[in-house]
Image (cartoon, rainbow, N blue to C red; front, side):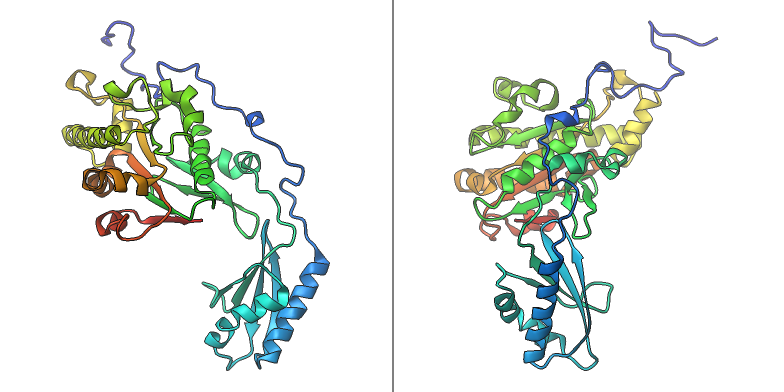
Length: 356
């Protein structure tokens, strides 16, 4: 008959959530509710006057158009114009400032041509922008049913659809924007959307925060969600540069050992490996174990480069080149993505870009 070792039934597949099967996921009532949520406020008067002004400016400069249509988003309205045949696109592009002036808008963006359509887009900020709340996005069917490995809910598109990406596919993300533009808010949105979807066994964070205050709110989840070196146990959120270097080197060691396990198991990536492990095809006595994804988030990368330079750059470049197959992903934020800070090696291996 079947051999049962201890109380383990070998015919059943392993539950990846053991031993924390009673872990409760965060609930949506923790998030702030806004009144204007989900309903785009459409000001038809503002739309009509903007349309007419755009047409007038274009006519003043001798650009004739066939049609103009508006798509209203939460914070921006997109006007799509179809120019008459024979109108040069570059001519319309050069009128950006003139159109912004006539609309009295903060600034407009001209997308010429719109990808996949035969039109030219003009994006104009709404006079009364809507709040796009975290609640409305995490509550959406798209997020609830997402089958992504590491889902990041980033906001809403111009057509009011929830915009999500899979960090496991990106595989590493570079976030840039001047101070006060909302980078840290973006980082918090990334962490929050992962916390709402992943069990502590499936995901571990490495949070590096030279500013010391941005990530301190995550201290309560440190015990079950943070990956820390033995010596960092007292402070799982790393604020000290010397510890950052050690942690990154530790990640490199982990990456190498994970690759050895993958090789032993005859699998090519973390997904295949975990699937094999859960089906009990790998023996835990040989060092095999369920691999959680690891997301390393560095809030102010420029500061690290100033204080530690080469020491930090080396392990990060290694991780960025190799780590995605073993489920280690990085998100790096910086205020100035210049070559001094984001060197060629880092840039080439961080295909994801997010600009504020």
